[in-house]
Length: 596
Image 1 (spheres, one colour):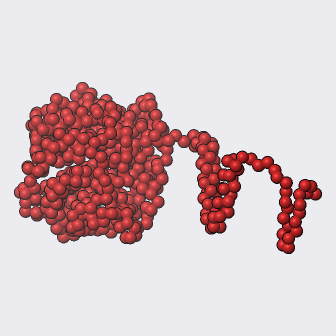
Image 2 (cartoon, helix red, strand yellow; image 1 turned 120 degrees about the horizontal axis):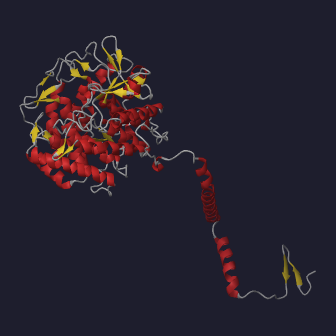
């Protein structure tokens, strides 16, 4: 069996002596034997660990290969749904509705839960009250061509203001004069953050110097609490958050300490006016009551002031108003437009509208909830109830085009009136923002339908500018087939931003470039019919391209809101002012979102 060998028997094993055989050269054999010998010399635990690591690497490689190979199949399965960033929709005419919108990004899932205090502090490294976000970069990315056009408009408006109205509230660009209302340099302060966002640093430095040396609140002057809060206090706070310059915070604190006296009423609901010198509040000169939208659209600003300074008085006063109104009776979540500051009760028989004196109440329900980290549930509930009430009681469709609009309820019997203010066109943006934060998905359908109506109130006019108020036809075979009409007294355009604001929200949240295209058409209307040699003017008649009747006034919100939202609408990078980080007040001043 083993020829040529000798077998030698031992007690517990057998040894075979084999004849010599030829082996491979030592250099080739040594590594193999050495590797096996070293492997056997390793402790068993180390060998187990090495084997596990090797198996893990193999599994990882296998998963990567599988994902790569399955990618095209997965993509093709979704090919029927266009993605937001790839929308390329050509406007054939002003009446063509936008394409069916793709879904918004998944809403925040913690929308109805109160954030635990421990988690809030963990998420908020600046939980001493200071803002939590990093300001946008000082130098913006390359502007788009449309943005450059908006910047040119801002420079033109600013040049006229600087030349003829520096330090005053408003420019009268046709007569090359100025006008004052609050005597607070309204246009300048309202425009501060717009200048910063557009990177107009020379103009910003000029404005900053005026704020530092000339802005004085120690005036024996009655000012409207609401307008001063959203424009001046909001502008100072926003600019502080963007620049981190103490100057703007100091001015905001000085103003806030004067304005807070407006809450010294019998009910805690603020009066309409405040004297900045005496710090005494009073009812408006035109009547006994305060406007509902005014007393409920100051909370973002006063809360932010408390969070920055650590002084709770501002937030406490403002939040009390929201809590008080939460407890008052409503009509399916909808509120009358007047409230008495002394009694804290609604004026009987008041109109219910989403336009003037009612509008921003609904806006600030949602935005306060967002600002507070989605932790104050009654704000969310009141907002959702109000939208349901809007759908049930105010929504209607026109003839013949079935345009969605929201009318009004008048008098004690709450008769439906088929009119809608241009101011109401803030609502599509608010609805879309709510869906982004987890509100019912069908609110987006309302937003899309309503923004289309709002855009038509602009683009169906020969000037491509919207009238202040439109009346809508709900009866078939009337008005020669027109969906809406404008009365003589309502035909003015005041350089308002609301429709443009909503276009930005919808573009920002969906990526549908149709909204940019509509905004560009509207901007062209402003350029053609409102631009004059020394700025931009409101006009008295949007229904005529040849007889616009210039009103000789450039509103502060044209620089603070309209041009800002146009600039943001045409911005290619939408991350700098993400609605996940900023909440914009009613005057388009961005404020930080807090975690609690």
